[in-house]
Amino acid sequence: MRDFWLSCGHHLTDRDAGGGLLVTDEFLKVYLARPELSLLPEACAVERGLHAKLFSDPRRGVSAEEIAAIVDPDARESWGLIIAFRDRLLRHKTLEAAYLDLVRNGMGHTPPLFVNQLVHIILRNILDDCEDPFVLRAAELFFRPQRMTLHNKSLIAADEEVIAGTSASPLSPLVSMLGIPANAEIDVLTDDNAPDYWRRSDLFDMAFDLTAGHAGLEALGRVLSRWVEHMLSVEVDVEPLVEMRDVNFTWYVGLDAEGTRIGNLLWNGESLDEASQSSIVGLFRLTFRDAGVVVDKIKGEAVYLILAMTPDRMLRMKPQNLLTGLPLRHLEVTS
Image (cartoon, rainbow, N blue to C red; front, top):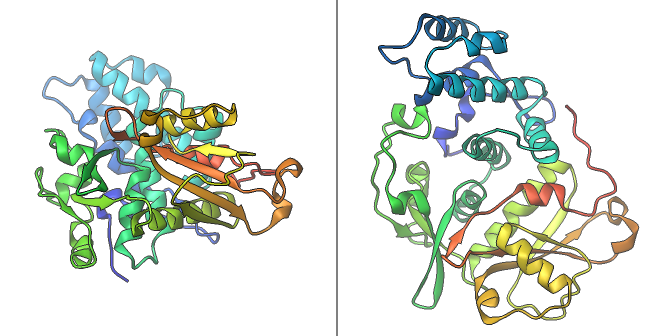
């Protein structure tokens, strides 16, 4: 089995009997190695002591008083955020359960970067057996914003951070450790260059064709179905649609803020203007293999999923919407 997405840190986790990711001390230490917690020469004795104690015992309890005693206000804020996030992870049996707690009960002050990193490593777990680079590239949409462009009548998604240029501070210490270069050339993923994905997976430098009727949206549908099955233990089929014909919006889920806005318009019987129509990247029909898991009022009906880009052609997917917005009788997770 070929490896991919090494920078997410999946090698530092274990799995439980149900296939969920278990937090290890090694995984926690990566957060302690983040640039925000790097000890500056002027770091106070309290911060230095806390840093050393946690590297020795990353599960050690940290009181609010300890954090408040750190002199530098920026360091104090960073420590507060990371310890709160660590404590949230440790309250749950698996990373999947911790993520579901975040999306169901509120993100609070959790940095979006940390949430995206959770999605990244959870998807790495879900797709561990995947041998299809198109499915893996589609999964990148779940945790990395994309810049959309029309090229030769094709709708192409490219990683926003790669296009904009990687910042001087790496998102993860693992990125530096792996020697991932700051700048990369972008190629559109095709059948011919698909084998290159494996060595380039941590560069996020392969653009993706999301044109209706092409393989990209079909691959994204496969990721959506596996995401639901792994996170909610519900088997679904997700089919991309080429056009919005004979669509009964009994229930819909916007896969991003723009998709939700468009779904609200259609739900209220309003017609879409040209700008809204052109912003739709993908429309999917989701069906449940077991009708018994669905609330009575939509039994026999499909759920429609809407993915759309903003007016400035940004695609910022919100995979949590799929976990909180489906019409299921119950959403249970072992915590």
